[in-house]
Image (tube, rainbow, N blue to C red; front, side, top):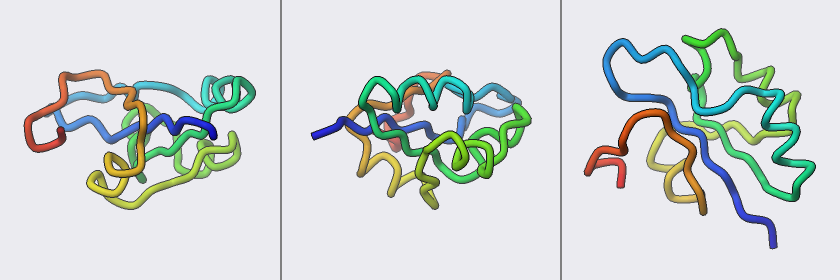
Amino acid sequence: MALTIGIPRETLAGEKRVATVPEVVEKLIKLGFKVAVESGAGDAANCSDDSYRAAGAEIIQGAPALWATSDIVFKIGVPTTAEV
């Protein structure tokens, strides 16, 4: 059973980065992972939901659903207590 890597939207004010880009998502999937991206997570970094979807990621609506379905989370900033 493949582990799911979750990519949430960053919550730190002014943060424009995203933990991974669609090109890396393709590589992670080739390694056997599933990848889920929170809708809008890459917007500030010019990575659209469609580009993640084309790379093979599942787009998840809302942070709670993403965190609940992820085995591993890639994130730039430290997770907040609420996120954990």
